[in-house]
Length: 297
Image (tube, rainbow, N blue to C red; front, side, top):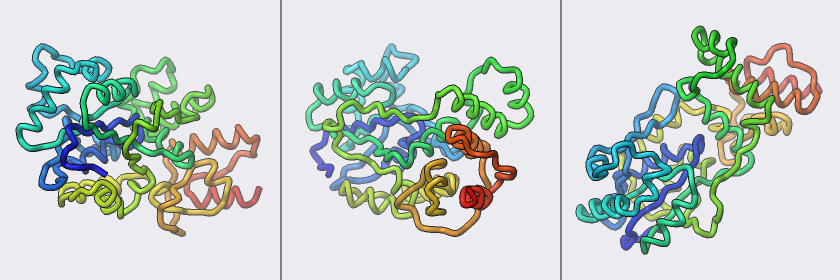
């Protein structure tokens, strides 16, 4: 649990693990009267992703550094201490958004006393969720050397994503999630991605860390959750093949609802069929189509 003597909170997460949503929820939370503040602000886009932007007050403290790339900035202890001292001068506890290299976390831990490290806990059954989150929008995809993809991207971006991910899965890319945390003994708190996809996440996070999370944090979580895939907000079926194909959230409420599959979902289904040498499914537009298919095998 956090305590008010904490000098800095290091929040390390990888693309697709929903860490930016948690950072937004933690921003402006209070701990024994002290406010928690993040280095970044986050806006929820139409794809259900939290887009980060370095806050102006912290950008102004960069000095001669004009293009703060993660791989460079997090190695500059002068800037990190400057940011931390800025927050402490306001009786705040700074939360640093860290990505890319776990070694940066280790280095900061050694340099600054009383740090507290958080990362996302990703069980195997949520790996598909993370992998699909990394490719929710073609805006993140630079020019892809495939004429069919580029043509499709101009006509239907969601289909283009499905096409792209099918090729990635076929090549072996994007099939497995590889956690970049190199030493979990250096982690003080694992933020559970399964709980994040449930309605009671804010209560869990508050209790675990001893925080008071305000109305804005709760509202943001509700809005964020409304835009996430139903495959991970609900526990839909007990069929093992369905769970192996798409992954599942063991902490989500059970539901018998039927949902439309996205093109990324269909990519995983196609990969699962080919990997297990299963016959093609003639219609796969909804979750019930897929479950009926698996039950007939």
